[in-house]
Amino acid sequence: MECVRKFAGILVKDLYIARSNILVTIVSLVVLGFGLSFLLETSALLVLAPVAATTAAFISITSDAASKWNKNVITMPVSRNQIIGEKFLFYILLAVLGMLTALVPCAVLACFGMDITLHSLLLYGSIGMSATLLAGGISLPCAYLFDPEKSQIVFMMSFMASTGIITGLVLLINLVFPVKENILLAFHIVLIISVIWFFISYRIAVKVYRKRDIS
Figure (spheres, rainbow, N blue to C red):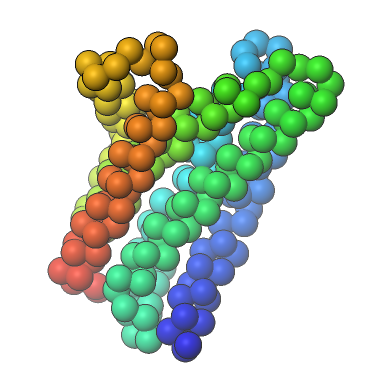
C-alpha cells in the first residue's frame, strides 16, 4: 500500500510540475482548433493534440535529471519498474488529455452545424495516437540512455520517424487489403501495432534504467 501511495505521489509530482505547460497546451489546442475550422477539418486537430500534449512528459524526465531527482527517487519504496512505469503512464495520460481537449472545439463547432463526422474523428484520432505512441516508444527509452542534449534531438526526430513508420505500415497493410476501401480498419491496425510497440518500449526502458548508474 505504501508503494502504491509513493507511485501515486510521483505521478502527482509530475502533474504539478507540468501544470503550466499543460495549461498552455490546452489553451493553444482549443484556439488552434477554432482556427483550423476556417482552413481544414477541425477533427484534424486530433492528429496534433496528443503529440503536443506529451512534450511535458519528456520535459519532466530531463528536469528530473537536472534537479538530481533520480538520486532521491531510487531511495523510495518503489521499484525501478514503477519509476519507469510512472513516466509511461504520465505520457499516456497527457496524450489522452490532449485528445479530449481537441474534442472540445470539435463538439462546439458540430453544435453550430460544422460537418464533423464520427468517421473523421476516429480516423484522425487513430493517426494522432499512433504517432504519439510510436514517437514515445522511441524517445522515452532514449531519455534514459543518452544525455539531455542528445535526448532532446531524439525526441524531436522521433515524431518525424513515427510518420515514416506509419507510412510504411500502411503500405504493408495495403499489400494485404486495399487501404483506401478500408481506411479505418487499416489505421486501427496501425494503432494496435503502436500500442504493442509502446509496451515493448517500456520493457526496454526498464532494462536501460536498471543498468544505469544513478549519480
